[in-house]
Image (cartoon, rainbow, N blue to C red; front, side):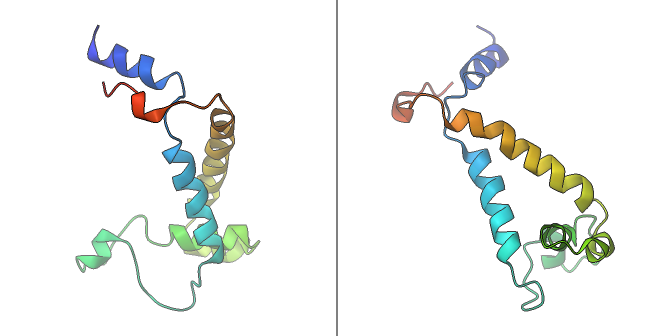
Length: 112
């Protein structure tokens, strides 16, 4: 069996642990409750390297403002937030049915 066919067969059954769902859902919850006016700590690797331009900086602020209904501030923080937010919500919604499937013993999953 060709490698990519085996991967598609393994992952198309939706029996893997929903890490993507947990990542997106927890990220939105963390952004909702984040204190964006407090500490200036950043997870941006470019900012850590003292590079002033980063195309993604402000996206987290934008998502925070969108979730709180401050659309003008969201646009000022990063306009792509208006595209990213519905895409993330759509992805979370499409992953929910995969959580309700029959329980699988993840320890017995083939590793590829």
